Every structure is written in structure tokens, then in C-alpha cells.
Image (cartoon, rainbow over all chains, first blue to last red; front, top):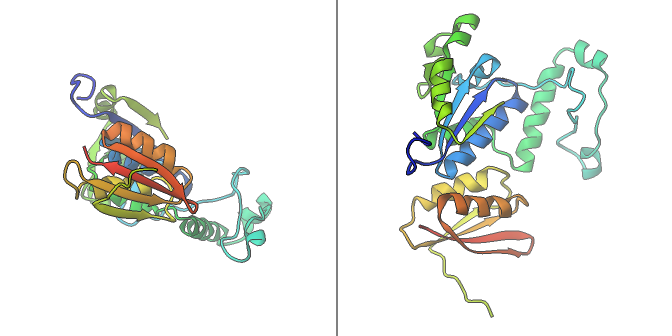
Length: 174
Length: 79
């Protein structure tokens, strides 16, 4: 209990509510960095974020409806890589496989730049005993079972997370 | 003339971006005894402020932080 016990380490409480590849990064980056600083960390995975607890991570990204997302190529000369390709919504919505192409491009770009994969970051979190809590209500709504998720996670509800977060020094909703 | 710091372990985080230098440093520190020194090398421009924060948060002293040939070098003493 961080605040009740002054000798306890700092505590970070995160809510991970999104399951796309781009949004999978922030909770795992913050959780692993806090774990590396000796903090106690708990992440509550709810709604679309719950899929980040599956053994095989299938998080994808879509530039459709996200005009802020840079579309860049991870290969070729530097000048070519720096081009920001403008993709009309009509094209993104109608070309089959556009999302998987965008996902592949983002993964490759991240890898080229030296960003760890989501899988590596999640494993780093688990190695540092980051608590991962799956939302029971989301499981019921989307029809998931306990065995659909990694063994290391716990299952809980809002009250359980709030009790944990009440004693945290940093609480963030992602 | 700066004193030469003799490290007990070298960790090369060149090419890695946030948060891996911090994560790897934390892991490497576990292999050291109290008072031993880790030399960490990174190329991420975010590493200097991150390592300062990591040092303050963990209590492992940042003895020296320098730049050499475009690389950031940190000497950290285990608490």
C-alpha cells in the first residue's frame, strides 16, 4: 500500500482501454519504465485493451479515420522514407488488405528505429512483476474465457482496480 | 583532468529507443553488488534525461554522464 505505507515503493496504476497497435505501446512502455525504476505497477485491461492479454498479440493499426497518422515507407533512400504519403479515406476504406499493409509498415518502421515490439515490452513488464488485470465485465460482453488470456494475468473488476489505484502515486487512463 | 572510472560491467544499448535502455539498465544492475559500477552506452537522445530520472528514482548514483562520438555514456553506481 503505497500511500498508507511510507516505506513502500511508488505505485503506478494504468487503465489500458485500446487494442490497436499504436495504442498498445503507451501502457507497456510506461509500465516497463516504471517497473525498471523499482515502482509497483498494475495495469487494468478493459474494453478493446483486453485483447492485449491474449497469448498471441494480433494488434493492428488502421490509418482510416486517423488523419494524424503519418504514412511512411520503412525502406528505400532516406528522402523516400521521409515522404508522408497522403492516403484518401476512399482508398483506405476500399482497398482490401490496406490495414494489414499499414500494420506491417508500422511494425517495420518501429523495428528499424530501434523500438521494441509490443511482445517484447509485455514480456519485460511480466519479468518485472507488473500486475496485469483483465476486466471481467469486458470478458462477459465480448465472450472471452479465462483461458483465452496469458496465465500471468488476473481477472478483476472496477472496484478491485479502484482500490489499487487509490493507493497509487500516478494513475493514467490510456 | 577527469578521474578515470573503472566499471565492473558494460551494457551497450546502442540503437535502442525508450524504454529499453532503462529496462536493460535495471536488469543489468541486478547482477551487480552494492558499490559496483555499470557503464551504459546509448544512442537514444532521450537517454540522458531518462537516466537522470532513473537514478533519482532508484537511488543508484549517476557518477558521470558524458557524450563521446555521438554516443551517450553513463556510469552508474549500485546502491
